Length: 156
Length: 156
Image (cartoon, rainbow over all chains, first blue to last red; front, side, top):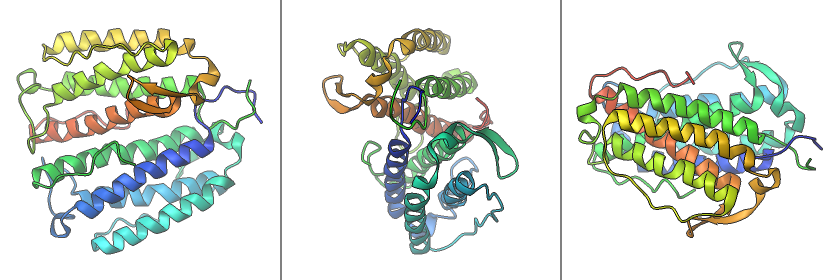
């Protein structure tokens, strides 16, 4: 299928991401509902806002890679934790459905995500995954500052 | 070279990691020297300790993947910022030298890192990269809590 050496296959990258998403879901569950959109450290955004950012990037990025549709309207409004978890699970299913529709050669193709972020598709996808890890790491600090034990990082 | 589909090539994965490492280096530089091994939020480890953990994992993991030598003695002692930056730069060069020695098929091989962490090589390498992103995200919170503006996440 390819004359390139492979560090990570498409299937492995999705599996890796979904493992991270399960961990992020556990963090959302562990977060006290009344602090989700209010608590913060150092004037940063509250964890709920960071999660809504992840939510606004995940499926829209993969949808764009699949079909070139970058006309996404961002929805980052605060909402109850149960609603966020429901959206999270919908996105998990949508990613599983969309991912196999990415043609193998597409991962190396240059594109401009959302009309403003240029790069090969694999880098754009990694950006979304890395951004989730980055902000979830911040969620760990918020939880610790709130006296809540976060789920272990290595469990996926 | 392979009948597998490729999301990420070996070269791209190293380039991606070195981009993250440049950002982490900027965070170390931005951190106030007198807070590096003392300041923390929520009783977590100080940023210097997290950086020493990254340092203790990066080259030893790649060395193990290359030659099966997992006999690494961890060195996570506190030290001056200039010394940490010097070690960081040495590791950057060592990664560049080691990485091309990983045979392409090795990335999919099962191994047991450091005698205790089983997985295919690409997952073990991703773990080290993700761990860096995770703990660096925590460093962002520490910096903000100290009133220091961190470098932008998207700059690599």
